[in-house]
Length: 149
Image (tube, rainbow, N blue to C red; front, side):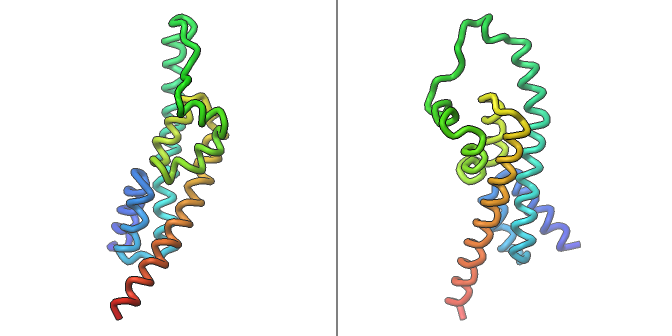
């Protein structure tokens, strides 16, 4: 039962942020593979929720507030320029690390990314960063514990 509570804690933190979930899982004493997997699962669940509900919300908003009616050409800021250059791949690879997977998915949908392509790159980025952060956390934890001996 204690293992289940630890796993649910890491999954719940993964929904919010990988940076919080992986150190928490390692601090709770979960094995590194289980920690990384649970954190990734939480992040993927949050992205799935955002893509599923966000796509429907975006479609509804576009239908309700037609851009042509307001005379705007769309966003032209710095984020949009980065989006134009790197697309869904760049967003999917960077957002889990920089500002969270769910926020990255919402941003991608807002900028008009196709849901399937965005989902692929977001999951790829989540798995990549979960593995990397788990490795770094495990190596760092091993180094710290060796200093205490």
